[in-house]
Image (cartoon, rainbow, N blue to C red; front, side, top):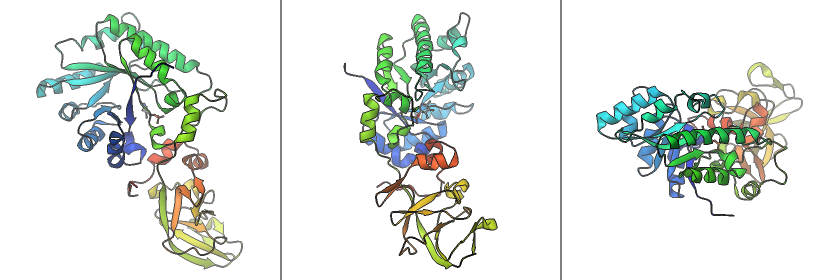
Length: 375
Ligand SMILES: *Cc1c(COP(=O)(O)O)cnc(C)c1O
């Protein structure tokens, strides 16, 4: 296989998926990442303070009044609307600086980006947007981006259609005489399913360099692919299954242990009633910390390497485990909410399945007051 040239833009948005921006941004830069992707201008300012040299791309919208901070903190901004370019250009002129922009093309998600029928069609927005990057402008078209929103699906037609629309946009950009440096495409699912080579080839056809934007995989978690996804799995995915391990463990401690008689009720509204004499452990984590209320009576946490069922409702600051079958549990003992203990492991997928969500939400809902500690 030909050598693959693709730059990594490490997605550290949303406080590094709840893992802590201040821990993770410097860590990925130390590991060689030259670019970071953040949610907002505010987060970009925080990332700049942590990583003075990295390229920092704000992947959410820039809002009126944000331009000055973008320029001052040397952020790159995703934009797709004329008013966003107005904001950035005015700020750059005031500061006598320039602003690198990544123009987002919406190739099918109807979220951010200029719609292809607006951009690619005759009389669409392409000319007006591209004219803003004339040689005398403080706006510089640093990249073109789109988001592959179905790279985990077995049927690759959506992704193919997206790449075709993107290529049409690249043709128009080239015809307009504008030369962006980066083709910025692809999340974890795209990368792990082997799309990097496709993206790099597309970039090369337009004299651009490829930039990929994985998030979840950087935290050691592989997105779930459609069960009907290629069999055997692409090499990139098989290799990732060998090598990636989740980097986050979420722990708390036992705050107290008590014995209760048969018939004792546990927690708000007594949704659990002891069927026999039981031993209960109070743990210092509640729904404020992101321990989802729906887990009460439906999930187990690890104590002494054994799964102990959560009994009764989860409270704001605490929850109760049934440790009747686990001997020697004492105040101060470690409780693992997510991660490994004694050879067993609770995954973000376990949480996600129990609460009807996805690992991304499980991580990002871990409460702000839970200290993030690098180990
Ligand atoms: C969050 C996000 C990513 C990263 O997605 P993962 O599935 O976590 O790899 C990439 N690009 C954009 C635009 C995003 O919003």
